[in-house]
Length: 300
Ligand SMILES: [Zn+2]
View 1 (cartoon, protein in one colour):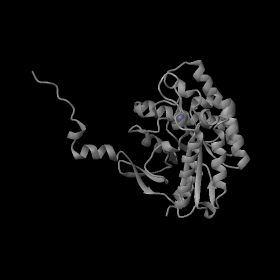
View 2: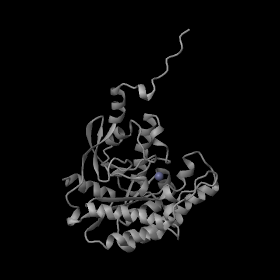
View 3: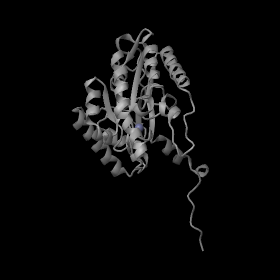
View 4: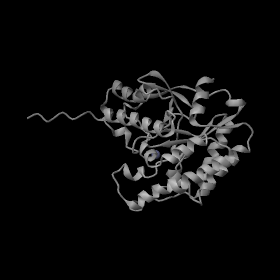
């Protein structure tokens, strides 16, 4: 009797197979501009992922305690963040799952009224990279619709909940006419996204786990996950990223979460980062959409 054929191990793959996998979504030309708006030396892109209750819901969780932690993001986190941004006259981007927007439409309207951007962040913070293609497309379209209906503005960009793509994500985003994504890691400056080697016209404004508050502060009571970096050290990491971006004339991008950074013992990190950047001459604070639009039009 024949033994069933085993799929080849990765070390047995022919060259065209691993080349095809790598080529699916790639960084194309760099979109680093010679200077930023008004001759600025450095661009600062602050972002907040308003996951709120969806961190619990997306795994099918019903913990009332963890849901209340999400509600803190709406009741305390976002208002506290908006106050800091308003005090310093800084524009930022908020990535909002559709379920968050449906739970808290007034929060989204307040964000937009203050001049900030709202971008797509999935439906219920689903693991988008594991979805069947049709479900992923349907959820992305529905999420954009909910955000547009809530705020009156069509979202220009997205941040995938997984910080990952399925093989279909980029094609769906391009078909939707989105200007940019902000979930991938191939650079520290904006770049053009290639799909199977072809330019898509879409821009990537890259993120990085080292510039994400959740990595340092997240806590799961029933798993071994605990905050392991003191707030002062997190500030130090963010500040070094900012200082180096300034030296290089590049882009400093930061991701925070209202139910992570919003606490009394942490919100100062956001304020100090803004003060630190403001103390330098030639720093442009802008939304991700503004930065992408500038980078695309003025790439060196
Ligand atoms: Zn998120």
